[in-house]
Structures are given as C-alpha cells and as structure tokens.
Image (cartoon, rainbow, N blue to C red; front, side):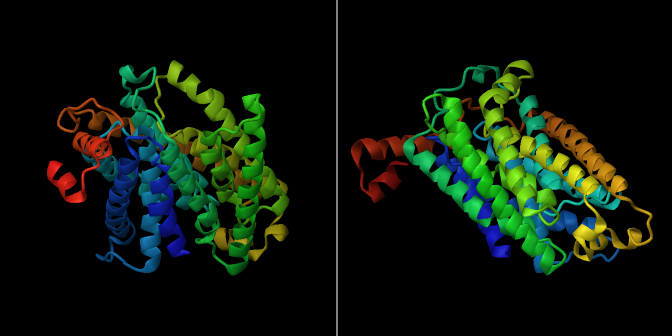
Length: 394
C-alpha cells in the first residue's frame, strides 16, 4: 500500500498535471520537485511536533507514509496556481502549508475526534481551500479571458487522462492504508472501488447529457471520475456498499456541475482563478463526503459498525456512554469548519508572502516552465536537429 500511495503521488498526480500544451514538462517536473521537498519537510515538522519531548525524529515506514499524505496535500493545493508561479514560489508555498496542515490535523483529531480514514477533511478540504486562498491573492487581471498558451493538445490530454487512471486504480489503497483493523481495511477497499466505479459511470452519463449532442467532455472525465474517491474517504470503512455507490454518484454530479457552472461564477464574482479546478474535484466532493458522514453517524448504530471502527477510533468513551453519535456528528461538522477556516486564512497569508517582489518571477509569460526550454522544443521541431546539436543549441 505504501508503494501504491507512492505511485499516486509521483506518477498519477504528475501525469494529471501535464494537460497544458507548453507546461506538460513543468507539471510533471515541478510535481517531482515539490513532492520530494514536501516529504522531507513533513518528516521534520511532524517529527518535531509529535516527538519534541523525546528530542528525536522517527523515521519508520509509517512516518514516511504520513509525510506522503502531507505532500499530497501540497501537490493538490499548488494545482490552483499551476503555470502562474515560479519554482521558488512553489517551494515557499509548500514550506508554509506543511506546518499548518500538521497543526490542523492534530486539532481535528485531538479535540473533535474526527472519523476520516481517507483524509476527506484533513487532506482534500484543507488542500482545496488553502490553494484557493493563495490563488485569490495571486489573481492576475490579464488572465480574465484566458491566455493563448492556456491550451491543451491531444498528447497532453492523453498524458493527463493516464494520470487519472493511475489515481483511479490505486485510490482504494490511499483510503484504506490507515485503517486500524483488517476488517475496516477490507470495507474501505471495497467501498472506495464502488464509489469510484459509480462516479465514473455517472460522469459518462451526465457529461453527455450536458453537452446536448452526446459528446463527453475530457475535462469531466479526467476529474469527476475521481470525485467518488474523494467523497468516500471519510466513511470508507463505515458505509455500506450501496451507500458508497450513492455517494460516488452524487460526488461526480457535483464535480461536473462545478466545472460547468460554478468555476466561471467564482472567476467573475470573487476573482478566483482555479487553474486545475481543485474546488470541483476536492472541495465540492469533500463537502458531499462530510455531509454523508454526518448522516451515516446519526442514522447508524454502534452495533452496526462494531468494535473494529468506532470503539477503536474513540477508545472506551463509547463503552462508558460519554460520547454519543450526536457528539460525533457535531465533531465532524466542527472539524470541517476549523479546517475550512484555517486553510483559507493560511492560504491568504501565504499568498501575500508570495507577492513580495523578492519571490515574484519577472517574466509574465504564463504556462511555460522555462522560456529556453520552449525555444529548444521549437528548434527541434522545425529543424529536426540531432540530439548533440540540440543540446549545444540549448
């Protein structure tokens, strides 16, 4: 499962960010850079935060896995400003987000006892609104009506869709690796698969209906087919297969409607340029998942869930009747509210820091990794230089 999460982080997300025609290399390369930096920085921050009394930083496999979850949070967030920030800004972005993520994760677990095995609140909600906070501060008026280089090609779309399939295949591991028992892990794997599968079928159906001519939008397919995995993460070991199927359908619907109508509304009304549509894939399905967890907790019983879930998540409080289902539902809602507020405020502060002149790249040529790389690509395409001549020219 560690290997599966590793593949999602560096292959799935990297390929998914390669959809822009002149930023495919940038999307993959910067994903590789930020992923490595975020993992190492997370090991330091988490080690200090949780083990500062021991004066040690633990480097077990589970610690590296926790660091990779923090890195995923950063890589989702940077999608909101992809192509509009330099690598120095992205590194600073990551350095600012990781400590806040660790503090928020500690708060929602210690004080609200949140049930969130797949990180719907702690990872997806947090990363989404942190990234949107930064994106709103870094708003570029000249990009109101898009940019000539903000386009895709058949090759870049294919690479991005391959990334979606990688994420789709390995998502059950992502949602189940932190399960406390084997039974809970099996439930999480099966339920995540059902949510992803139902979301994919819903994506094909709804996308063709919205088009009017029966055509399927590749943007919808690249994103909404994963929305079920985001939404089901919070209840993957708690819900029934039928419920997982329904959550996947609803999450995919909200994701598609977000791309179709809500993104343009946010861009017009609050000047928010969400480059990768993280609000549609992570924010809206995250809200669907949070609401579903509240409904499931209030409608279920402790006997239904068994000792493999609630009693292990919350200890003996249930046995002593000191923590009710209503308390847990309120805890879920409070965890969402705290995460939303901390991530958005942290995003605004980080955005203001990134706007300082010492961090802003002087070039305004958006959606290019480096100008010289683009020129080298044009030279080889036009003149078919051999490799050695190509390198000398660059």
